[in-house]
Image (cartoon, rainbow, N blue to C red; front, side):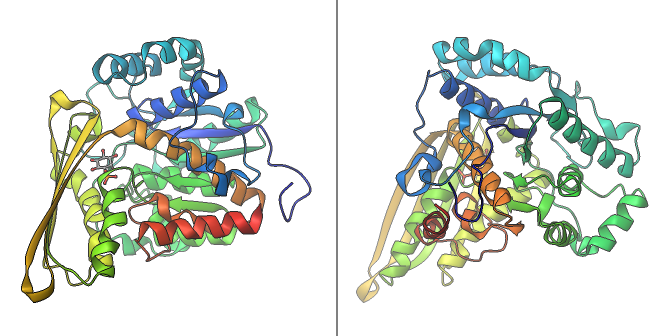
Length: 404
Ligand SMILES: O=P([O-])([O-])O[C@@H]1[C@@H](O)[C@H](O)[C@@H](O)[C@H](O)[C@@H]1O
């Protein structure tokens, strides 16, 4: 039993995935159902580590999935494509959960992609084509509610795993709840999809996770709304690969007083995210969150550059090559290089499940607003300036210690 409550976190937690038919969502659903069916383990899930697993968290087996998407290709077809192109999931795991995926696909509603730039295909269907922004937000909210009612859920966590949007120009225009609500009422068509999903979640009292660099809950107006309504929310841009290594490694250079002159990071990948990031406007937010980590840990760095390029044949296998040129005692110049080769979705998926479980826990314990204990999951953690991975992780361990 957790501290501060008499009842355990319920076993019927809903997970509403924005971008439910994408790579990351599909892998999270496949993984959760494969765990439920005893076909895979929980390696890669932080909430299964001893320090955190003692919290009273909703079991992965009980998570009920639904979501929005604008693409018609089914989750089964997406998972088959991932199996054929990437080898993840493997054929046995996919067969074990195929019927679950087909059932979940029936629960996916048409979403909005307003101001999503290159993240749109010709086949996509969109709510915002015929509706005003206020109606879009209401429709999204109704979709959340009816899913929750239909499945008799105690709680619904909304997670944005959709493709990265272009950055919102002048986000300070929506710095307060009043300004944001006025913009929604006046049908301000500059507002992006991620803000509509976040606003509808907070309005309905649903915890919100922004797994992407898109604006969403980073907007001042959403933050104020969430704090007032005491709804937990967190983000931004999950730290899954290259940036994770950087945030663990950079503190070593700082701690030994080694002067990093240049850090070049070159990422190549061939999945749909990589394709969307080919577009300069869509890539801007991702490049900023990936780059800012070093500036914060190594304020004296002379040259810090990140590139992301689309290499179609790699599919979901993301390679990052980093070159670090640094200086030590007696002005001696030295170099370090590393190469990271990761399955983009298999790295992200367990973190989606972790974040759902941990934000459900926060909600159960009445912790509204931003969630600093979740900083280690993000490249640009909202409300936390700390980027050092192990210091961020200590926040989670301290939280677990306090609430176990
Ligand atoms: O976490 P990380 O490897 O630094 O950053 C990654 C990006 O470089 C990549 O473009 C994206 O597809 C991944 O989901 C992830 O955000």
